[in-house]
Length: 281
Length: 121
Image 1 (tube, rainbow over the protein chains, first blue to last red):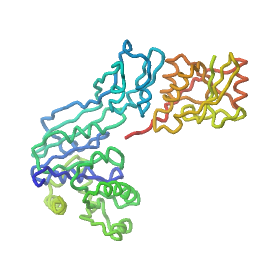
Image 2 (cartoon, rainbow over the protein chains, first blue to last red):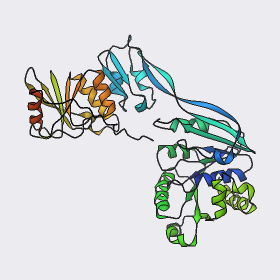
Image 3 (cartoon, each protein chain N blue to C red):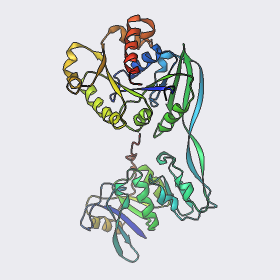
Image 4 (cartoon, each protein chain N blue to C red):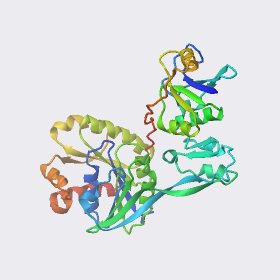
């Protein structure tokens, strides 16, 4: 287990707290690291990395296809499908792709072998390199119901690295669950506002369910916001760093530049964060 | 001709249910025989695809006319493919709507909503 790749999941609950900022900068100061963007509905980590030599892979899910010459209208598939993705009309089987969860059950219950599985593309993954960081991003096609299969494929990609920084989607839904399932450590990015704290508590519940070691970074910190982070002191939750609201970061971020690659004080700040994480992984 | 109307309670004086797919019951009437009964809708608490599932049940019960206040696009696709006519319910009770149907004064339901398709992210 000691030699296995270590995964650090960066999450927040609330959107816009700085998950991508923290993940990108963290991956940039770790030797031999990869950055995986699991925010498949709006991947934007590569706006910072601007990776080169990008390789593209399609992501498929299985959906059923019917051969009506074999279907006898028994409706076993319709009854089996818990997501109501199938309807039988006289001499016609309607299949609702968007409701299908690709479980394959309908194919198994069909005695007449009228159903087979076909591939449907739901998105892509992109792998490139930015200096020595491997950058892997997933992108879900517009209108698709779930990005979970894309996240599964992102983690299957074999990378010659020791550490992976995972940029999680916002929220605390299935996508986030899939993303942190195999993480070795969860790093929370908390914005010191009542909204940031509220959504932090929601993802904290999820992380506790998985029994993962975790730590907190307060982003966009200012002394006036102390009142909003009392919760952490009261509940003995370790704050690894408070990253001060800094015009330099704002300007760097809005130009898509990586602050830890350019300013030694930020390189050392992110190195401190990584040193603290290393105590747990 | 078999007609179905979504309702919240098993009562002819009851208003037509605002939802089609998640209505607790359907009043199903065979207009030739003049026999009507209430059919429990098992799709009422489905996490998703309720409109599709309830359409399937009505089609299996040989329903040819649906009188409803609303209908989502998935359900409408199923019903249209099975040649079920979708009529717009008028304000009032189940009985009022049956009377209106008999005098051919119901209009076709034009507004099909996008559905409340479960966000399963």
